[in-house]
Length: 275
Ligand code: C2E
Ligand code: CA
Ligand code: CA
Ligand code: CA
Image (cartoon, rainbow, N blue to C red; front, side, top):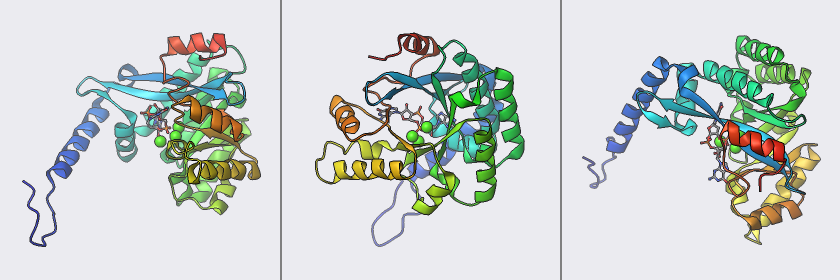
């Protein structure tokens, strides 16, 4: 039990212990998982902020573990990054998503999340490029999302990986913008084509004082960098309207659509709209 008080530092938090145990179980299950069998893809629509027309989808991975049941990526991706399974996961996600794209009308884009561990491995990058080449999908239809953690060390290696993706015409997006520790100068290094403004800013857009001004400033910064702006986590009509009025380029969030199955994504793709 937790023993607090009397100025003693709490070294033994039971929640912490449970957390460590859970992580170990997730890691074990992940290592023994049949990824081809247990991983599934969902697709979340991204729309043009001016007219709400469908631009494409972000692919998001789901894991139905034979041991643990459903585990969300927010939990297992960090574990996969630590135990090395992330490379196999990224390959499965990319291969399947590219194959699903063949069912969409031309012109729709696919956004794929990459881990810093993908970018820092040249053999993994070659494997990903091979998957794209074999799929027959043009690199120009793809956007690769990286988080600000990529700004850390190994900058040269990361930049050369990004250049390989640019060389096949793909776009680069900075994911979760505003949550990391990037400086403007390092952001400049990445020459992102798109900046995804984190949900934590989007929830504050209806605050007419700092919230609205903050988003306005970020959208302006994106313009100055020559990048498009995308607002993540749009959950209501007010946010949608304000963001569109402020000149944000792309919108994504539950109010437009939750992540959906491949079948539902096909329907959206053919309709060209989500609502
Ligand atoms: P992310 O890349 O920032 O993805 C957006 C997350 O926000 C998704 O959660 C999505 O379902 C959720 N979301 C979308 N719209 C809304 C909204 O309006 N409100 C709220 N509250 N949430 C919204 P998900 O699918 O659980 O993914 C969590 C994170 O796991 C992702 O964050 C990404 O960092 C990672 N992830 C997911 N799939 C992959 C993958 O294939 N590869 C890698 N490397 N990471 C992945
Ligand atoms: Ca993302
Ligand atoms: Ca994000
Ligand atoms: Ca995230």
